[in-house]
Amino acid sequence: MKEQEYQTLQYDCGQSVISVCVHSDIGDRSAQEDNYTVAENGSRVFAAVCDGMGGIRGGAAASRAAAECLTDAFDRSTETGAAFFMDHLDDADAAVYFLKDENGKRLGGGTTIVSVLIYGDKLNWLSVGDSRLYLFRGSEMVQATADHNYGIMLDQLLADGEITQEQYDEEIPKHAALTSYLGIGGVKIYDISTEPLILQDGDLLLLTSDGLYHAFDVRSIAEIASQTPAEIAEKILQSIAEHPTVKRDNTTFILLQYSEKK
Image 1 (cartoon, helix red, strand yellow):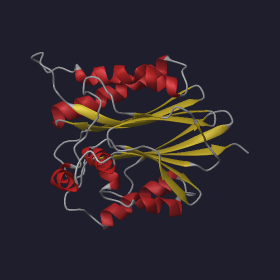
Image 2 (tube, rainbow, N blue to C red; image 1 turned 90 degrees about the vertical axis):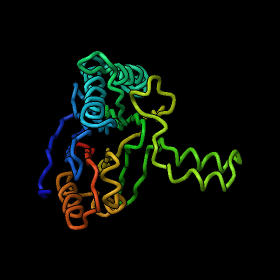
Image 3 (cartoon, helix red, strand yellow; image 1 turned 180 degrees about the vertical axis):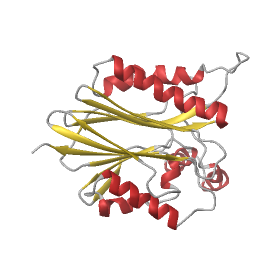
Image 4 (cartoon, rainbow, N blue to C red; image 1 turned 45 degrees about the vertical axis):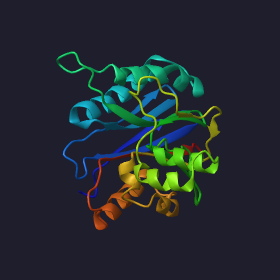
């Protein structure tokens, strides 16, 4: 991996500036199933990371279809807040579910998604699956989204007394299996922020597929969160290169920094 495999963007949103840095690489996989999008419409900024499942045909097509569906909806609309995600979640799920191959058969792929909508100083988000949104404010870090996987479900079932410790121990090796994703054919489990988060000057957002947080300690970004997204991306990629994992997954992330105009 080269150290400088990233793209930088900057959006003037009136009273603020959104600085963006995007990175995506295939890792040690044979195919790239991740897709991403960053778009501006007036003073609104939309970004999403999608991590496909189902191979180069199903997974890559699924992540691309989800990203394109929501980007098209964003370009056509003036919606803000949770309403945008609520209105278009089913459309994105259907866009993936009904993908077909050259013989007219469903591809059967799926994709996770983490996406944000920034308008003014407000932030809303949608996530389905195990791609994540992190917020860095000063030296503090918060994971804003929950993972939708079997392990989280088992934790809750154990805490509620609905399964025994023995049943939990038997099932936990399957913890990474997703319990929700786009293309499932009727999404029931998802995270949509019902109230906007008010952004503060210098806030840093990280949208990422699981390839990053399995290969890199995301908490360490808190120490350098005041730097530019490009500087942060360079240090992330350098750290991954210096500490390689046995087999690295597709890795895609978007860094967005909110800055108030002085």
